[in-house]
Every structure is written in structure tokens, then in C-alpha cells.
Image (cartoon, helix red, strand yellow):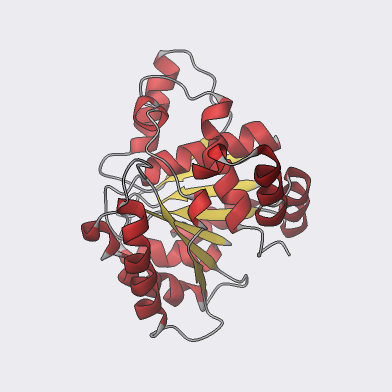
Length: 263
């Protein structure tokens, strides 16, 4: 993250101006009852599970809140498999989880599962896992925030518009103001690729928003300082339990994208 290289005084000023304080974030979550976050796009392979786990860990560790992760990926069940590794290594995981099977015709709808979990948890995070359009629609009906992780690659950027359109569809039935944040991940600070892709992402967002009724959905892209790096901590998290310090990058991004929502 580029802000780590800023002079100390400039760094502190940026934090004050761009981030919710920990106390402000906790108070806002308490005021809304339960924060619901959906993570993912209508495409596999964009780091959804990595983002989900790091955000869940940061909220549980830093905010001390009760967190539940919903794994909707019935193909790979990445969250479940990560938890099995943690159990085998006797690592303590500070959040709960449930598995949602979209193909279970006799089971409840995803939005019903989320509603039930809201009664017991402070934060519910849904890993969409490349879920189908209907599941993404159901998440969008309940969420306060959607995180759309996208690597600085054209093949991933093209999935932004259909994801935004589906989120807008669900937002029409959402009692909250649904916000979606397109977060660039796997950013290598040694190259110009992230900076080159920002205009392309902004263009895709603008294109998608032409089809969205004003007020249905608020879409943004975090400031460049809050992009997610290609730190080796991310690929290592499968074999090694992340440390609290490893989750700070996602924590700062979350504090940044929620600042306007909590205003």
C-alpha cells in the first residue's frame, strides 16, 4: 500500500481525512444492528475468498465483533477448506461460518439465511464464490456494502458492468442504501499496471451506471492509496494463519470505503 511510504505527518493527515476511526466504525455498526458485506463478482478467480477471510479476521480481531462468514461456493467451498486446514493445524479462528447451497431446492433462500444470521452476529460477510445471478441478487437485497475485488487485468475488468447491473437489480428491494466498491487487488507497486487500469475500471463503472436508476446503487473505487497490494502474506494465508498485522491493509480499505456510508 503506497501510504506506508508517506512522510509520518502526511500519513497521519491522510488517515484522519480518508478513514473512519475504529470508534466511529464500531459505533456505526452498532447503530445499524448488523453490517452485511457481500464479497465477489459474477466471475471466479478474483480473490474473493482471500478478501473475505482477511476482512473477517480484521473485524473480529480489531473491532472485537461477532462475525459470521457465509460460503456460497458449492463447487470449491474455499472458506470451508481453509477452515479445515486451520483445524488440522489447531489454529484459532475468530469468526463463525455457515455454508449455503444455492442448488438445494428445499433449503431457504440466501436472503433468508442472512436475515436469520443478523439476529446473532454484528457482521455477516458473504463470499459469493462466483455464485449465480440469483444468489448475487439476494445478497444485494440485504447488504450494506459490496466489495468487488478486481486484479489490474482486462479480462477481470470486463466483468464489472454485469456485476454492477445485478447489484442494482437487488438494491431495488434493499431497505439500506447499497454501496458497491470496486477494489483493485494484487497491485504490484513496482509496475505502472494498476495506474493504467484505473481509467479502464472507471470507464466500466460509468458504462454500467448508465443503466442504473439514480439512487438505487452507489458505486465507487477506493483512492489509489487504498488499493490492495500483491503482498506475499496473501498467497501464504492458506498454509499459515495470518497475523493481525497482515489484515491491516484490508482493514484500512474497509474504513475508507465505509467513511461516506457512516457520515
